[in-house]
Length: 325
Image (cartoon, rainbow, N blue to C red; front, top):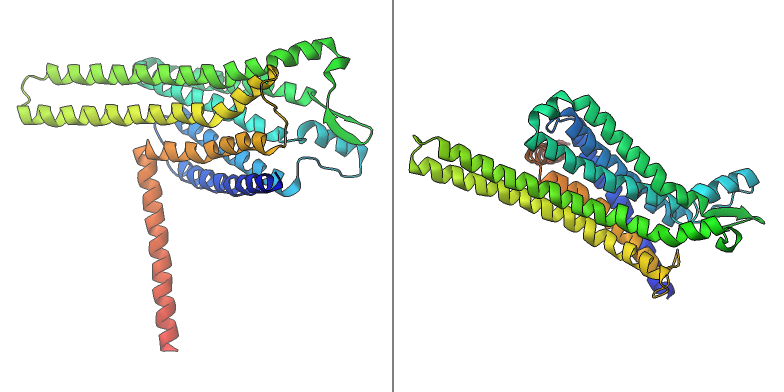
């Protein structure tokens, strides 16, 4: 058992650090470029910041531990409420999922309702940030209530002491399952499916309208249509699969634990495996964003080539200097 625990902790530390680095690099590239509208760029930057935070916190938990004791009762109470047992990771998970929903809605509005999208840019931005913030507060607040510092130790609230808390935490797993897994997945798939259908219909109509275009041009445009639809479909599949696959294990085991079919004990290797999948999601999302966004991919590739070129030039100069000496 201890070998499994050590293995999971090492993997969490490694992938947590990796998620921080990957998202940091993509964020740096996003700061130096603009993808679509200001709102689109802002949401993509948000995603990198949130996933970098989640990875970094996961790394810190493996280094510092899940229970911090400072010797000060006030500080210990604060750490108990906000830090105990992977607590801060879940705010990152909540914000990450809701931000992906907003990115999907941003794409939907930009493609299907471009005029409204341009005219209502400020209202959309305000609405999306309110949506993300409210979801973060409402979904994360129960985690703060569930922890209690007593007799010099941090632990979970005894549900037998409060009827209201007992009733709430009986339905809380279903709330997480619906609002953090089912609804976001369905919403993302639905929005991107509408985008694909619209693009296919709109672009095919534009080709049919121009009767003076020769067959070779029509064939070239037809291939371009298929390529765009195929790429967007691939993006849909990757995003939805990321949401479903990486979050499914923890969400399903959490719900099954309410029926006493499995044991969901925070800190055990089986539970930490679910956290590991969440951190893998933080590594995968920026890769999906880069691969599905040509300007971002091109700039990142260009930056890497320049960096490698500079390193190569410095190595050549160093070799020449050494030979001269």
